[in-house]
Image (cartoon, rainbow, N blue to C red):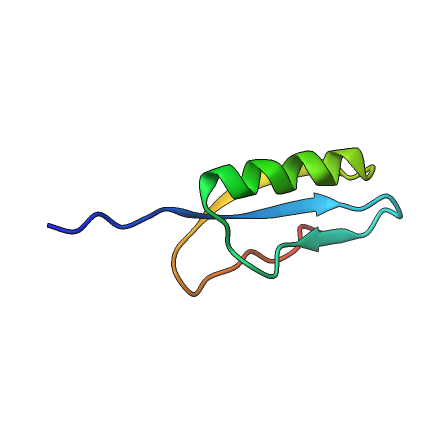
Length: 61
């Protein structure tokens, strides 16, 4: 039996007020580092989104 690794992406609002979404998927430790970096850069509404292989989220409106 193989265990599938869960991937994650991010959605957020940048410092200019634009909705953004990850262009890549991350593992759990990497997504947490990216989330912290976004917060430090002034992003708001940061959300970690579980994704399936080949999927990425759309920016929230």
